[in-house]
Length: 152
Image (cartoon, rainbow, N blue to C red; front, side, top):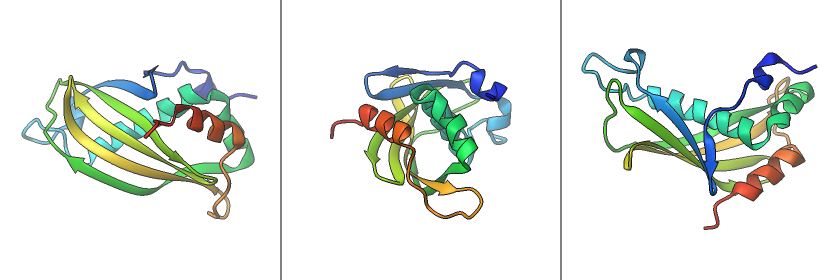
């Protein structure tokens, strides 16, 4: 049986090999100066990453849950380039960089129009939830990621 969370329509869209996720800055995202608090960029890119995966391979998340598999961030490097402010309309661009047997890398950029605000490199690994041991990516997810990987 499918969870209602998996039945919700995904947000964002694909343009070539890039997933675009629109987001607006709310008061809760900002500090007292009305600037997005640095840690909240991680929340924005996490939301974009999950919507990207839902749109990329909608059946895989349910299959991973059933198999006791999860995706965990192994490495995150983020550069803050310019501030976002209250009420800004932003978009998070997600690009698949590299796909391995048990992990994959993404490049995620938070942008306001054509201005880069934050630039993140993310490495995710597939793990067994019960033990925390590494696990191979499900074939359907690996294939979907490889199809969207940017040609470097």
